[in-house]
Length: 92
Image (spheres, rainbow, N blue to C red):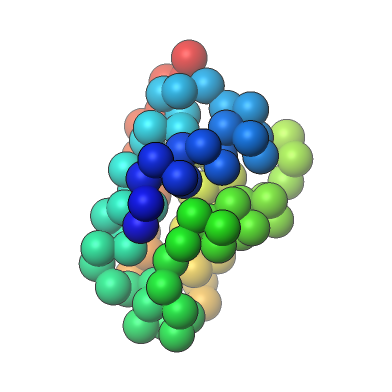
């Protein structure tokens, strides 16, 4: 997972503040490093894939909320994704 590329794509796609992007980039890196997504989806987790999935979340959600929405979907589908949710977010 290219963290710099993901941060750039998140900023372009969602116009999210730096702190929100930072926490999502961190969680995405942890998810990619775990191999969980690759094993379940049969594909590498890329910045483009993250942005694509986060676009599916309701429009009124913040970037961390979009991330948690996606992790919730993966948790329902496969299990094992709760550990990648963002537990605390105070915003910026």
